Amino acid sequence: MESRIEDVVIIGSGPAGWTAAVYAARARLEPLVFEGAPSREMIPGGQLMFTTEVENFPGFPEGIDGQKLMLEMKAQAERFGTRVVTDDIVEVDPSSRPFRLRTAEGNVVHARTVIVATGARANWLGLDNEERLAQTGGGVSACAVCDGALPAFRDQVLAVVGGGDSAMEEALYLTKFAREVVLIHRRDTFRASPIMAERALEDPKIRVEWNTEVSEVLGEEFITGLRLRDTGTGEERELEVGGLFLAIGHTPNTGFLAGVLDLDEAGYIVTQTPWRTETKVPGIFAAGDVMDSYYRQAVTAAGTGCMAALEAERFLAHQGGEDAGHDLPAEPVAAEG
Ligand code: NAP
Image (cartoon, rainbow, N blue to C red; front, side):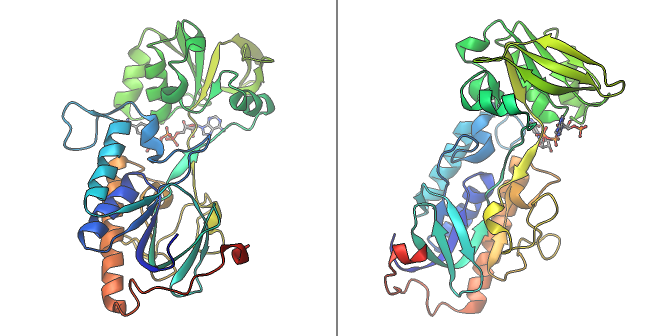
């Protein structure tokens, strides 16, 4: 990594990150994007990489594949001079000016402004066998679109847990492969938007287990069934399934920001004022799902990415550009611990 002061470092590569990059790059700020290293829970490009058809992003009347949309956004950002690093930022020192960031690989980056756009990741129920089978490819997944087409799930009874739009979307997607999809929801009404709920309820392959939660995941090498509990009576019963897909919401990726920025009780970044992206640290901005627990849409994430880039640009203009692009003395990476 070069030892120079970056004008704008963007952490994250979903719609918010790439939109911020497009704006910052077109403002000649040569943004540096840390797109994240691929892991079990997240890959560069964020949650849309796990979505097949995006029908509600304006400009695509026939819908667009989620992965394609993200690759197009990245290409658009790169076209204007955005630089991309496939690594995570694991530490932000808000007390130094310029800010000092450390990557998972141990490199140090100096930035005059930072845009945090790290999004959110899937939640799990927290059952022992759930995690074990998810890690060993035993038929438990938090992403139907990533894993649903695997041969092991063909013509099986597949369970989806959740009552939001993700659960509806995952259940509908799985009907392409499954013999039957059982939607397991802990209440008696869905949280999902009416249009998505309607589609799921009308699908002949989808059956709903209302007022039900999963108390145990059964199976040694591969899932064989679920122990279900009636949330009203507490009565337990078993359901044979050949796959389990969790769709129970997300947690913002802000672990590396504890003590750095204000976070709400669910971990979302709190911004200073409504309709602004500046955090409690002047020069650090937040965009996308990492600061939005309410809308959580690709288009709103893109919108806040734009806002963050414009705010960063104005912040830099106020600060003056005397140290921008200047070299810093090289620092030994090992000394960063
Ligand atoms: P969500 O709306 O927060 O729904 C999470 C669901 O999981 C809720 O039904 C919740 O139950 C249930 N749940 C949470 N914790 C649970 C637990 N421990 N055990 C059992 N059930 C649990 O999350 P989402 O569905 O991922 O959607 C997030 C946002 O993305 C929403 O704004 C949604 O509209 C949007 N989205 C849109 C689309 C689309 O338009 N195509 C697709 C996907 C997502 P309760 O209802 O009882 O709380």
